[in-house]
Length: 116
Picture 1 (tube, rainbow, N blue to C red):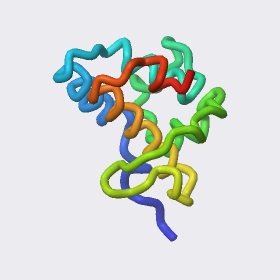
Picture 2: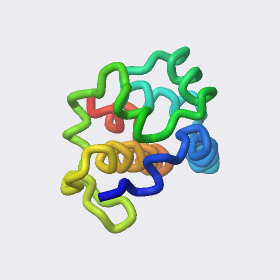
Picture 3: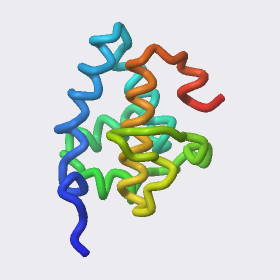
């Protein structure tokens, strides 16, 4: 079965949308970066390199330094789909990121978003 087209989409092409969504709700690019770093284990430098390299979502998650084990605590709906029920690994990681950005845009405090 062929992967979804989002897998080959670069993270850099969607990243500005995440930032815009956050900023519309008076949140910051720094908070978006913090969420991505928490989820993937990237440093700010390695995240910036991946964005500059136009890395696809599939490669971004496959090569992430250390996916956060607490990400399994992320639950809820994104686009009518329960993130915890997504079976395909790459799609579940993308949905986790979408859910965290949604929580940021809804004003949730960072400690709760980062499952602390």
